[in-house]
Image 1: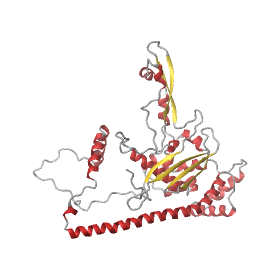
Image 2: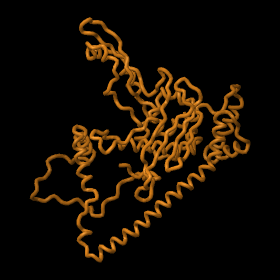
Image 3: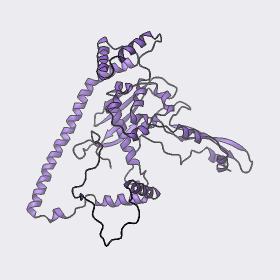
Length: 405
């Protein structure tokens, strides 16, 4: 089910034109009836198709089933070749098999090289954590080198002004407050997940680091100081790969597992409490019923989506997208946030990101909607009338599923 995850995102751009596509549109025959309506734009067709699919998801399943039955089916061309030619084709497949073995060896050596240099990076990450948390101060040489880098990339007058202003302040500040929260909020994919409610907990982030597994895979480690939300000192999420390599020797992502968060009473950020009025039809008495429903939160990241089994008849149609986004988010933390945290903290890393209007528009929160849902109304009173008070405390099974990205 899982597809190979490439090491690098494909560059965006227009799809290439097939070689057999005519350069000019075919002329309309003089004997054919001319269209009597305005030209239909491609966007209109896309919207119409999306509307049809949304109304009946079975159409998508039927199309996927038909396409799936065609995959791997022979056109009969190879079988029609002379025996001598088929023998050469088989020989080329044998050569390709040897190539695949070398590709697998290449990917394994790349992984070992990554681990080798990760061991060299680790002391730098540890020094960074010490400075961020106020346990150490950078050396004069490190500060000078950092200021020189700023002079090369920014306005040369900016650094001296910042240093002078800090020296005049009488407030004693330890380390760099909210370092990781600020860095995460500058990373587009992470910023989309962080709600206002999450920030109070994420301010206690001490460090974010990763480690490689003995087998292909990696673990992300989020370390927190003591806080009012949960008792965990660290919360981890582990990404596992399949034992067999994919096409081209790439490692194939299999699944992810997250730690259970030990929330303190009433502090679970992944749920919210809804209050609704209920009126008994017999006694006419009204009471307020509270129930807990899932809500958007960054901490849903530690409850990753689960790939369905082949035997599952009812599956989430968006599960493949959610799995891919969850994996990509882990890769962004591993490959971008952790290695260049200071650049995300200052925002300098944004200039190297390929962002489009959709990315910028995606940074929004649904807090207003949540507030509206929490409000009590007379309409809800009528809809929620119930004779059985025991049913009132049951959780809403139709609550919307939390987003993962």
